[in-house]
Length: 322
Image (cartoon, rainbow, N blue to C red; front, top):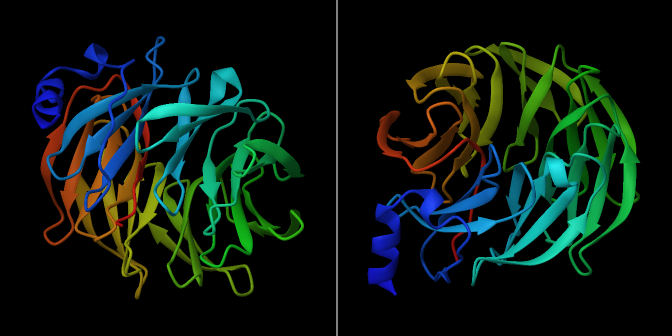
């Protein structure tokens, strides 16, 4: 099996895009990357120990958002053009269910207990809620205009949804799925991430990152970053926020104790999705127009690897350690 995986990694994603291979999740982590353009509708699987693509899973048309259940057993992938969410079993890297989830499903967030998936529907100005027990939509929530990003706080009581055309963030009470607050943040909010202690939400917005205090849902800081921040990820210890800047082709590193930018790391062209490994040592960045993934060492804030073989990578999620 190991020999087969090494041989596969030599080729491009196109060479094995429709083949799935079982992986071990014992002490390893894997990055799941949505990759799509001109019919190449796949999720690429990267072994983060070797930074090689080891599998490709065919999903719906134009996959975008991706999230992994806390137990690491399932990956949920939103496919905009097919109005579906695919469910991937990580033990075999096969699609085990396909869920109809509103129009043009985009961003995905999963509750900490793994019971529900929140999926944005930009066309409908709503969020679809999927029960992972039955893999079916069990509710919808009306939010602002063109919801684009999603994050859930660590205790699972609130979902935060960025609305790009109404310049605000909707706060959903996950107990009864109703909007309990709306936070004005400014033009075009996109990616969002919440600190491990649940006290702050970091939102990519225009040419800045807006920081929301989740205790009273008010804006407490605005941080100038690169051009058009999109993806946002926070280190497991909460000390750093990493922001992919689409048009300046770099990643801003924010010290969350001072809310200041402490580094800017040049990556590939048009960085979009971003994720941090569970040990906090690496950041993975999907570069749409250079068709690759940049791997950043967080101790030096330098790119230490570039993974090729993609068509147009968009979002990234990384499995937890078990």
